Image (cartoon, rainbow over all chains, first blue to last red; front, side, top):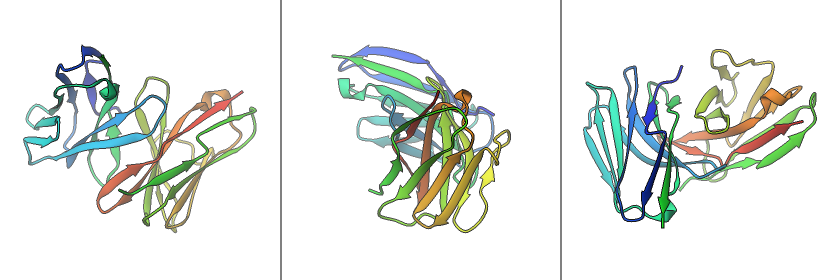
Length: 110
Length: 113
């Protein structure tokens, strides 16, 4: 069953602006991960946040996790045209079996 | 970083034929690999967990006789779509587990005519 649900489904911004994507899930998790996918390509792992963590940073990425609300957000600061891609959250309930959300298509206009 | 090679990148086949997709871990050994499928503009859905030396574990609703998985070595898992039909057309992606992290292949676009 579908676990993670991202919103918005699509986001269009100008270069230099920040992009925020949200993800909600339904069950208990070990960790939540964010991935990036360029059109027709494989996935690139961006960041992992464990269930006992509330916030994590990696370069221009900032991820938050609220286990009480079963939600997470991904913030990309100072966006670039090269950030244009689909972004997926994925929850790991056990044994690295990931359940992916529907994704957010981010378009960064130069 | 760890590299997972998936081959072929794309394949077109006639309805009723079988197609084999390979997933290789190039610089590490992976006892566990996962297979996903993705329909256009949709999310990835886990199909099965491939374990080296044992039978794959399939997710609910995935036909094991339709999607044959073989994980014969620590660096190779194969997914064979048997008697493919147009509804099997999809993007198939594998991932390999090592050091507590998952690394994904670049995917295979299957088009069944």
